[in-house]
Figure (spheres, rainbow, N blue to C red):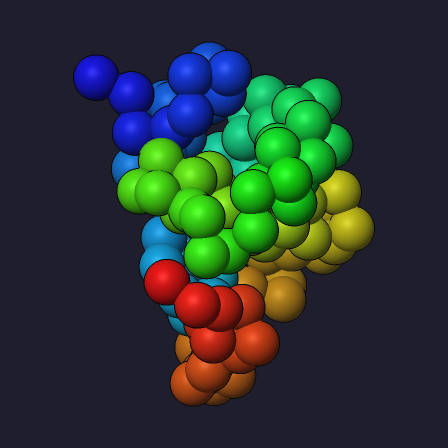
Length: 114
């Protein structure tokens, strides 16, 4: 059974690790995925990101069901994966050493209506 809207079922293998409800949890997922995990998610998710965001924008937060929320959290997780795999690249390991001291308490993404 898919936890995502049917059009995005191909991204289902990434839901358990990346479709997390808070920014802090998604940041921790980035750390635990490592460079290869971030790159794999980015390779699968980036080609579908525009379609996913268009789909979600067309609904609006108040119309989200559980599958839509999972897709939104997955796309927010994709931003974390992209930061590690694409922006920082080989410097990701060095930056990961400092992240435990930079605790995320709350972010705007954590305040979206449920």
